[in-house]
Image (cartoon, rainbow, N blue to C red; front, side, top):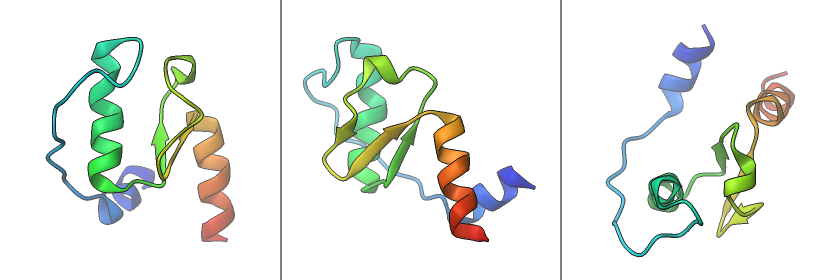
Length: 74
């Protein structure tokens, strides 16, 4: 049920590749996708590889995201 609800509100994006945005170049694609989507959140279990915020996107753990998302659907 959770994945169905997420799928209903997701969008597909084509990020522009550029210079690495993180210390780990393999993680940069996630910031590029978040930027292309103007995402509110980037959900990762690896928050130490990302800034706390990237432009308009908050970098959060899955637990933080579920907590915030749960507050909005009540």
